[in-house]
Length: 204
Image 1 (cartoon, rainbow, N blue to C red):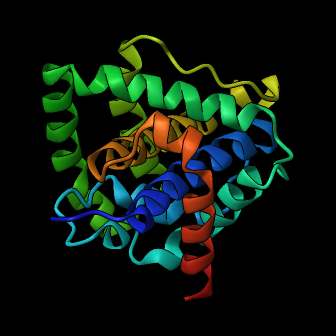
Image 2 (cartoon, rainbow, N blue to C red):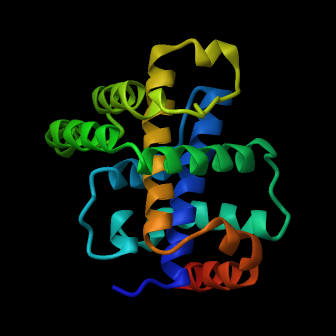
């Protein structure tokens, strides 16, 4: 299958959207369900027909597309978000080389999927299961992603579970980015192409 720059911006937008929710929860204790749900759903859509379908349609990552567009235009207002994205991409590289960890994640997602289908991916029980899976698998790899925020919220089990679940979703999008031909070089030197693709997706 031939992948386009539009596929790559959707994957990047998914990662940006997941990490933005991580930042939001870490600071306020709450996520935006409408933004969190499409990226959390994506972890269960391993065999989707297209990149857009991974997120239930391109509209599912519209907030991430806008975030990405702001970043490319130097309008980003959260300096920690790009750092978190870089750490996620580095972690995904390690994950791609860790076959045992990949198998454990796949088995865990298969186990959690029926519950997610029944209750929805943003249900506390599902978030706890996804967060536990991340803690037992990907979180054991290095470099570990460090999330900064309000200590009051970061000390709450439900907040920690949701952050971990969203980090799992962010790694899934980072993996998708590489699978559809994304690379660090392209991100550094193909910014205009990426910005044009973001504009196309948002106008649809």
